[in-house]
Amino acid sequence: MRSISPSRAALCALLLSASLCACSPQFNWREVHGEAAPFSVLLPSRPSTHAQQVDLDGVRVTMSMTAAEVDGLMFAVGSAELPDAAQVPHALAAMKTAMTRNIGAADVAEKAVPGMAATDIDAAGSRSGRPLRLVGRFTSKGRRVYQAVVIGPASAITPEIVDTFLSSFKPGA
Image (cartoon, rainbow, N blue to C red; front, side):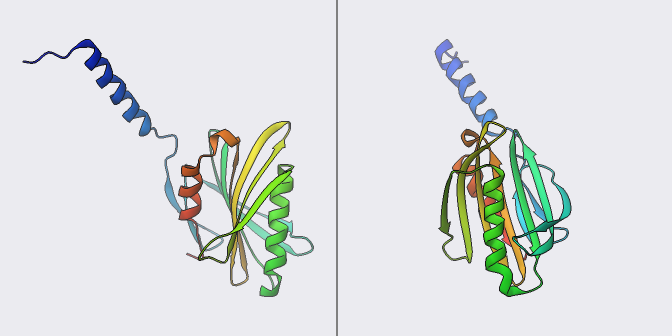
C-alpha cells in the first residue's frame, strides 16, 4: 500500500473541504410558480406569498408578491393586473420608481434586456443606514406587469446569483 505524504494529505483535505463548501445548501434553488399570477422562477428557499393594494402612480391595483429570503438577501416577484393595457408603461415606471425609493437609491443603472420587452435595473442605496443593492427586471405580458428583484448587501449579490434568478424568471408561464 502506498503512503500519502502529509503535504499531499493536507492538499486532498483542503480540496475535499472546498468541494463540500461549493455544495453548500445556502441557496436551495427550486422552481416556483405564481399562485395569483402566471409566472415561474427559481427561488433559493421556500417562498411566502401575499397580496396587497398598491398605488402605481394613480393606478390602484392588487399586487401579489412571492418572496424568499436567504442570509439577508430578499428575492421577490411582484405582479399586478391593470384595467387597461395602455397603462402598462406608466405602471412599470411607477414600480421601478417605488423600488428604488425603498432603498433611497442615488445611483440607478437601467438597460433593455436583449430579446425581451423588459428592462433591468441595478441600483445602490441604503435603508436604516445599511447600504443595499437592488437588481431587478421589470416587464409585462398583456395587462399584467411584473417585477423580479433581489435586494441585499452589495457584497452578497454576485453575478451568478443574479443570473440564476433573473434568467429563470418567465412571466406568463
